[in-house]
Image (cartoon, rainbow, N blue to C red):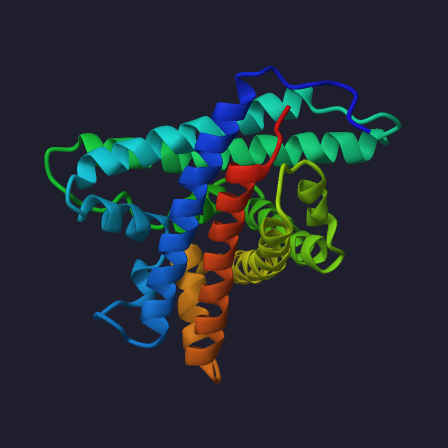
Length: 270
């Protein structure tokens, strides 16, 4: 059982952060679904967080909405970091405890970078995408180091491991723990369970593809082989039955966004 209670100010931080995260995931999923079925001239190369942020910016009052999403993602990042240092369970093994802390910290840092990108875009006087493929940049940096191929290979295996864990988390239904912390109706519970399973599986598949692309970059010592979410969607789209595979994964990503909304609305974070 949880042996400590989070401070009261954690609740608005978590709710704001999860809402912003849900918005980003829903938009990424919508962009990927549109790309799968060639709707609105959308392509898989635009179906990533940068594309989601750009679509927010293009809305009426888009700069203000983007600013709100950026602040929300910073809230999410802060919540994850706080959780990494305050979350404790009685009898929890050290390996599991530190693994969970590591996941919280990595999640916090990841969404910190997206939040900063959103704020930069909102504060720019004119629109424009953000700085290229982050995974290609990371791969190039690692490959320039001594034993760079091994370092990049290790990073690829870690990312693939995260993907496998996401799928395991879904199929083992470990995500059901969120239901136990909810002030929910039966309808909200059912929605959380269904969207959570679909969402975590979809995320896991995308992470696995990204890990595979990084592993290819390591084996070939070529940063150009690395890719991010958009390239993972492109990989799906170019495979056999790609339209349907990408469409299914896109719906899963949207489900994960809805899962975040349900958590933000009903979960007890104290």
